[in-house]
Length: 107
Image 1 (cartoon, rainbow, N blue to C red):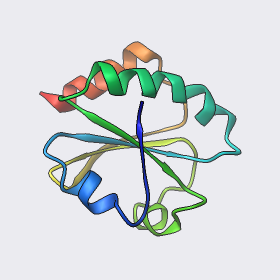
Image 2 (cartoon, rainbow, N blue to C red):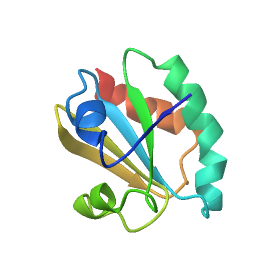
Image 3 (cartoon, rainbow, N blue to C red):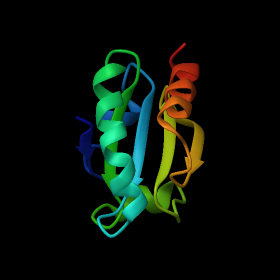
Image 4 (cartoon, rainbow, N blue to C red):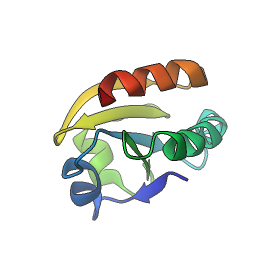
């Protein structure tokens, strides 16, 4: 299950993590976000130790959302060594595409 993060714990959970972190910027009112949620939850277990997957509710956490200029949901940003290194906007990726994308950053 993907961990939920907030503006308050974003730095220790994401920026200071010792593995790449995928942040799922989502919203309760976003149907594509809800559709992706089970896939990301499953991948968080499968890829544990290689990639950390967390979720950030944009409505409850405007600080981080604005800081990384997130304007569409879902937005997926991979952070490595405290920096954003790649992103995807929208829910157009298949499970296989997400795995390949995440593993390319875990290597």
